[in-house]
Image (tube, rainbow, N blue to C red; front, top):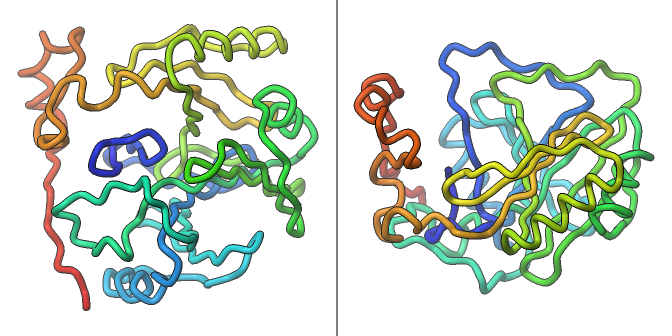
Length: 271
């Protein structure tokens, strides 16, 4: 898991490492880009910072009144930086090598590439209560939340391309947050009532999850804010050790021997 200093919902991106996995194939029926919010005026810093790492940048370009800078990570995942005004809820972690005035603050949203819009539009607006916010060419924007917690999902309609093949560099699913278990139960009832298949509630240690696949093929998760990442270690020590749920503790020694090592590096901040 990667997130802000506190591991707050709305900042978390999860990676699943599969050694020697083949590169995924881009197409319809997938999350095709993940976007992060950065402060307005920070693109010059990010262009320099990412270029030093050998990353090719596209943009900036204008979309829905926002400036967008995009690139691909080493596995081919499409990442976007969205410049927005100050977000006072962001918590900058003390050892962050990126200065606070330039740092990523939270997830802004995601883009779903689909073959059709109509069925997914119904799921977003009628079932999940997103707000339709406009159209830019073949891209349609929907919003949820408000203020500093507002997030966007774009539907990029490309009917004439093949379906995606999920593997390295692909996004497995996208998660929407709810406050607690009671709220999650209500949403699960809504999904079942709409005639869609949904999983049972799954305990992920730091939150509880349900999953369902929207009509365009993208896997959606609804996850609780609670109990949070401080449930098994202090905030000041987040990410320093291997944390396991109780049902995997008996296998700790085996897992420590077989899991790939994680090395944390402090990078020099370019000036």
